[in-house]
Image (tube, rainbow, N blue to C red; front, side, top):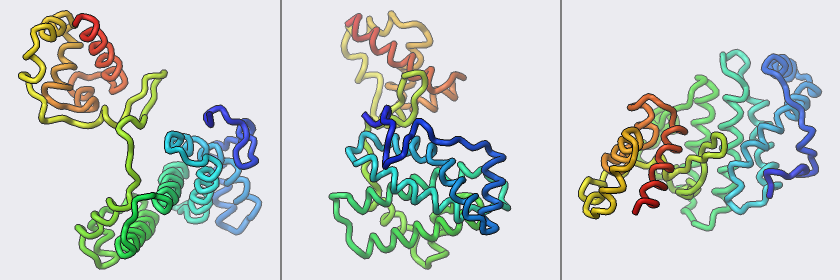
Length: 257
């Protein structure tokens, strides 16, 4: 169980430093001026950020020490390449750099083999995207990357898809007070219709016993095929609330059937 692990890669995670935004900015300015001590303090002060990101990959059955080390490489790249002149928080820049480094590591160790030419194109595209992102302060589009490296948008998109690590439908992407939201909760299903759900009389009766809000969420989620985020926007509550109400309604349906 790595969530409760105190030591990882020889680092006592319970004693990791936490820096304020002001401290980070001051250290970044000193590091940019060549202060090696400030650079090291900045790296040490953001190891907790690396740890929190590594924990997202706990279900991948990878060695967490290895992922932590790889994440630290991403952090170091973020420290060395962050542009202090842009009005962007360091963590906003560092998080995608750390995640990107870990994903590259996972792709390189992926059992699904991708041709060398496709991998080379994908890595060229990723490098160009990182450079453009650093230059402009916002994530570069596929069109901008294509123009930068002189390749078609279609080829770049296919290459990036080919090296993407598969994600489980049951991988948690958000957690609020113990109620996790999984990848499958974000997927629309436009094939669902009323007939699919109302053929069974018992199901009809179970739906009648739901509250108006629960019935509305079930209708939108499974009859209209909307995502939880779309439903949250439509009825004016949070996605976490939609998730809880949906799960509660499904439990009631199951019980009443």
